[in-house]
Image 1 (cartoon, rainbow, N blue to C red):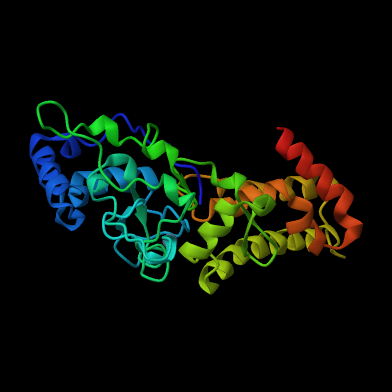
Image 2 (spheres, rainbow, N blue to C red):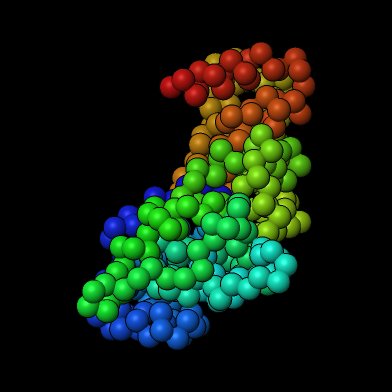
Length: 296
Ligand SMILES: [Zn+2]
C-alpha cells in the first residue's frame, strides 16, 4: 500500500452532474446504495485508474494484467458486515456515499472479495458510527460538500482499515524478511488492514519476498565478480556495480511499480533485509557505498 494523492475538491464531472445529483436524491430517499451507477462510469473508473496506476489500493498488485478492477467503496454502499457491528445492531450501509469521490478507490477482486474487505468497515467507538445521510439543502437537494470525510459527522468516525488516500500507509505497515506485512508499533490500523484485506495471502508474501531476494542475489553476483580469480573488478568498479543494484531498488519506488512499500522498507531497513544475508566480510564496503548512494 502506498499513499495516493487525490484532489477531493475536484471530482470527475460525472459525479457532480445534475443527473447524478438526481440519482443521489433518489438513493437518499430509497436508502438503497446498489442503485448507484455513476461511480462505475468510464470517466470515473479512468480517473481512478490513472491515480492508482491500475494497482490495487490495498495490496499494490497490478490488476489490469489478469483481472478487471473493482471500484471499491471504502465505506460500503450496502449493508455493513455484522462482524463490525455490536451484536443485534444493523447498519444499512453508507448508501449516500455511493457516488462520492472521496469514498471511491481501486481494489483488486481478491482484496475486495467477501471474506476480505467486501462490506467490512470496522471503526473505533461504535457510538460514533454515522448511519444517516446529511440533511438536504433548503431547496431539497443533495449537498455534495457535506459528504466530505474531513467534516463532521464523518470526520468523527475513526475507521480501522487504512485508506491510502487518507493516511500514510508506511506509518502503519512494514515488510519483514519473509515478505509478510506487519503493523508498525502494533498499529491497530495496520493490523486490522492486514487482517481484513488479507494482505498476507501467500502469493502476496511470495511476491514481496521475491523482490528482497532478487536484490540480495544481484549483490552476491557483484561480489563474485569482485572476488573472481581472473580479472576481478577493482574496488571502484565494484562500487559502481553496486550502484546499479541500488538503482533497481530506487526504480521500484516509482508510482507505476508494484509493491513499492517493499522498496521503501529495503532502503529503511537495508541491514536487516539485505545485508544480513551477505558474507559479513563485505558489509563495510557495501554499507559505505549504500550510504554514499542514498546521500547523493
Ligand atoms: Zn489487492
